[in-house]
Image 1 (tube, rainbow, N blue to C red):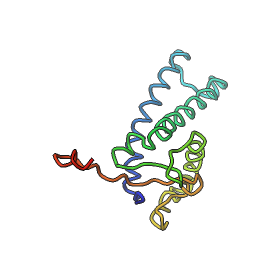
Image 2: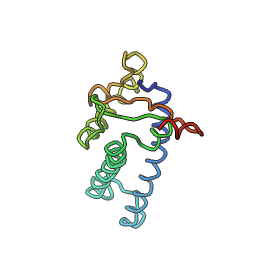
Image 3: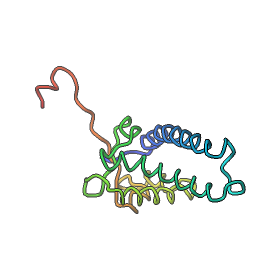
Length: 151
């Protein structure tokens, strides 16, 4: 079963909070190298370029670590979502980079690529189609006294 837009946006919000915290810590650590001075192209042109690479690398590392191992970020797990390849397998690092790059394209026209989920027969966004991935709803786990006998 495909994942709906509200659930996907909620998971992105959760992950966004965690990712912003990670990026803030990385920035604070890098500011130690500039004596607390802002990292700008005017003040530190080469360091600013390296800073952008570090930030981009952390974003890829964040999503790639989760997607290639479990298919779920922490936000996705909270909302019972999983990203997978069209064949149902876990993403590779290459898939992760493609998906993230395509997600930028989905956001550029005012998020139209995400709202496409509402019209797509399979509930897929532009970046799902471009990266040949899909986000699916994970079934609820059965818990309680009878769950042990069902296993």
